[in-house]
Image: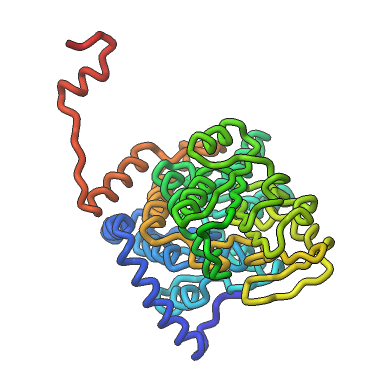
Length: 421
């Protein structure tokens, strides 16, 4: 259902507007883009559907698209990530349609996706590929369905799903992998996920990180960020991996690397960031210490085998909001945020300064799709390099940091095959 701004919700909307303004003031790159969009209206009169985390930072993106002349329509990409006051403010204060409410069940979640798609968006924005996958399922049943011009995808998990569609020759329209932009994954995944994941663990548990064994499953960009932040807080970080190159990198970065079976016996806090299923599986729970904390910071709630945990547990109870205690062979295991994204279920997600870069990529990729969709094939594309570097330059300008530029002599030297003198 759409957020209903009743009298009660109007007070929610007021609170949400203040929080949106806080984020807006910390996203200077998107502000530059918004000011240009306001003048030029590059997305005039087009519907853009977004299945994203409904946070204050997402609100700033939606406002930017509206300033460009578009009609943004939003639904949640995770049942526990919606900030209800933000959703209410978008509806009541900014006139942006939102179909999301925190804690929605599975049926409601997909009804909200349906509500966005009922407006036939010509561009979609995904955080996990649920809009794209829903459209593809419908198109399989109805060959006459109207397809979007193109889409953008925000997550590693979503890009993996879409590349699988492409490799099977089943992708029906072009997608820009916003996640793979350097100004996205190098910053959002590493610094954003790293900080907000630990923030979620600490808010949910008030657990001291220092001196504890923190097991990070996966050493991709998100895993690197979480490992770095956990070590910075004094944690003894252990990495589990299935990729020898990433595992070797973790070793060279100074972390202990072992199998999950080994780590399960000594870990105090477990965080999964892989995008795969059953990374912490039924076989691992009986090995864990009493009072082990387990959580997931991957996009879908499949990385921890929750069904297996429930089958093994002799009892289950909620000990505090978003912390469930399972008793397994007499030992207490604490699951955070129902196994969903801990940084959004138990905290507020990425800081605005990080999302400034990610959503700048989203906004400019929407503009690029509008201008070039007729030239694009049904493939997963990288964000154009010119957009990526322009965003990096804008961010540096906003931070007041200047760098050197090549002289003509230097440019000539590095582009020549001849040895210089």
